[in-house]
Image: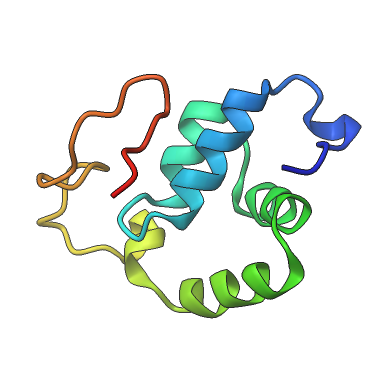
Length: 98
């Protein structure tokens, strides 16, 4: 991970890791990140740009363009939660390696 700028100095390394993880998740809207960490969509994009390799950032931005699940206002009214029902509980931000 790259060092975060002073604008994000109040965030811990674990917070930054979780924000990047939530940014990659298709079903986690930017509004959930803002609610939890206080970063709006533009701030999340800036943080992702800082934390990722340029090619990975371009791939992520291409995936996020027009994705309705990343914006609560574009989601179907039937979706009422941020977490996928198939998602396992993750403790300490550890993801099992397969």
